[in-house]
Structures are given as C-alpha cells and as structure tokens.
Image (cartoon, rainbow, N blue to C red; front, side, top):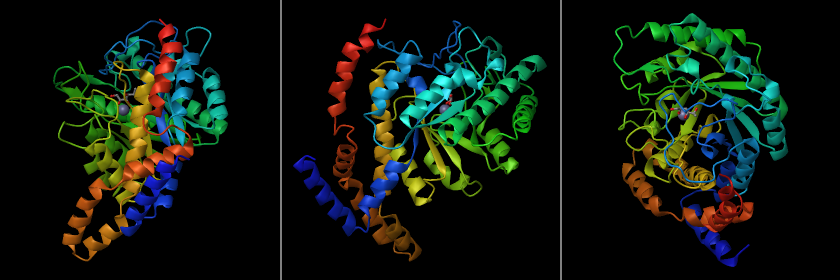
Length: 421
Ligand code: RNT
Ligand code: ZN
C-alpha cells in the first residue's frame, strides 16, 4: 500500500483512539454491512419488458446523458464495473420489470424462471438479491393498483404481489441470503378525493391478501413504502406515511417492516429524525437512501448532513444490523455508472464516519448530565480525519483511492457506453 495512505491511516487511527474509538472494529462493521444497489439507475427505470411504455407512477428521470444500458447484459456489465469500484458487502436490487423472457410476459404471470439469469449472475458475484413488485409503468396502473376501485384491476395487482413474494423466495434460496422485497404503489389522486378512506381500506385488504396467500414463503422480508405525493397525484396518496406505518405496526409481523425513503416526506421532515421513534415499535426497517431536491427528485446520494445524520442515528440506536440499507435514485444527466459509484461510495463513507463516532463516550456524558463534554466532543469530532481512514479502507479493498475510479469510468464510457446508441 502507498506509504502516504498508511501514514494518514496511522495518524487518523491515533486521533480516533484518543476519543475512545476502535478504528479497525469500525472498518469491519462498515465493510460487512450490506448496501443494496438499485439496478434502475443504469437504464432510467426502463426495465426489460418487451413492450413500449413510458415511466409512470409520478416518478421521473431527467436528463439524456448518452450510454445507458439497453438490455440486461449491458446493465449487468455496468453493474459489475461499478461494483468493482465500491467497497464493502453489496446486494443487487431489481424490479419485476427487469425480467428476462422470450416474449412479453405480463406482471400477473411472472415466475422465478424469468429471473434465473439475475440469480445466476448474483450467485457468480456472491451478492444477494432484493426485489420489488412493479406497480407502475403499466396500462393497468393509471387508475390505482392495489387500491383500485375496479376489482379486476385490483386482482391483477394482488396476483403480481403474490408472484413477487414467490420470486423473492426463489432468490433467497438461490443466493442463500434474505431477499428484501419493497412494496410501493403510486396510487393517489391529482385532486382531493371526497372519499379518502375506501382506497386505503382496499390497499390494506390487498396487502393482507398478498401476505395471506404467500404465508408459506421463507427467506423474505417485506418493506411497505409510503410517500407524500407523486407528479400528477399531488393532492392525495393512498399509501401515505400514516397508512403505511399504521399497517406495519398493526401487523406485529416478523417480516413486514416500514420503508423510509428520504424523498417521501414534506421538505422539512427528515428520515434521520424518525428512526428513533420507528425503532421504539419495530425490530427492522428498510431505508431508501435518496436525495430530494425540493421534491422527490431522486438525485444522486450526496455526502451531506442528512445522509450522515441517518447513519449517525443508526449507530447511536445500535441498529446498523437491523436496518436494511438500499439506495434509490435515478439521475440521467450524468454518467450512470459514475452515479452508482458516487452515491454508494458516499453512503458507505457516511456509515464509516458514523461508526467512527465515540458514541459510547457521548452517551456516557449524556447519562451523567455532562452536556458540556457532549457538546465539546461532538463539535471537535466534526473535522476528524475520516478521509484518511476511508482512503486506507478503499486501498485495502482495491476499489480505487480518491478519484482513481473516475478515469476508469471515463475510459469505460468512451470504449463501451458511448458506443451504444
Ligand atoms: C418511488 C419510490 C420507489 C421507486 C423504485 C423504483 O417514489 O421511491 O421506491 O423509486 O421502486
Ligand atoms: Zn423509494
């Protein structure tokens, strides 16, 4: 390893040890904590169904940077390229719309065999797979899905949810790792509806039916994701925060948990402030790490205050292991492989920074009422040399130190991505 990196590490290690932090233990936890990498950054949430259709459900990718993956081979190649530049345990997170079938297979007919190539690939990469029913970008999703008034439409989507849980079990079996399924429906209304409860009772019933029909499924955890609003559905969201939290907490289930997406709350609300309350009532939760800019814009995850506040809170609550961390953003304005590398390295770096917090000492000050020391240490700590530990960790993992990966991405985009059209 480069001498300067080692020197930096040694200085930083001493610094942290003085504060009472075990640096190597922190690196180990950071490295072993899985981050589930969303595949949909690579192709602007298009998927591989053999049917034309626009992205719908109130979410949007903006930008038209050239070189996006056009098929599953390209998407997996891009993911592999990104994975080599991201340190630590990873999972791959795919949507039902990323199936691979010879012809068109509708959402209510998908089967494990349509995901065999993903499973083979994950096994070869030694990563787990997480999964998502796709309740959007479909002709039958324009007027509600699991909450639809039309019973035939609702049945169609219930069947989709059921099949997704079975596919999740298949992934768990193939990879030997828990498959985390995230359920998110875009259902809502452009205007304020008069009847705000009936759609919610139908959504509740649909989830109940999905879980009841698949109660034999093993190896799967289920997140229920709420949202504040989507484009075109500004006034009312069926699966609101209160609805989803109420649903999850009323189930007292060992596999149903709340999903918190950073972009799914009012602009002044933050996920970091919710975790302590959520964990007062649950054993697990799923995070969709994203970055909202004025709305649920799904910008690339930045190394910002809120990201660090989230990872700080996980460490302080001692819930790093219990929390399923997944990324969820789609930026089409920059190189899509770089978007993965930047956002997921940031998430991992924030986790490392939080794990390097002298949390036991801070808690001790607090218990003893020494708020002066709590303030002094937490302020001093803000400029602690986390970068030196991060560089050392990246060097050890062989994923490129600093911006070394950037030239490689530039070469890959020139030689591979820009040759796509
Ligand atoms: C949408 C939700 C949802 C999606 C993905 C594609 O607002 O965040 O999680 O982004 O499932
Ligand atoms: Zn999300």
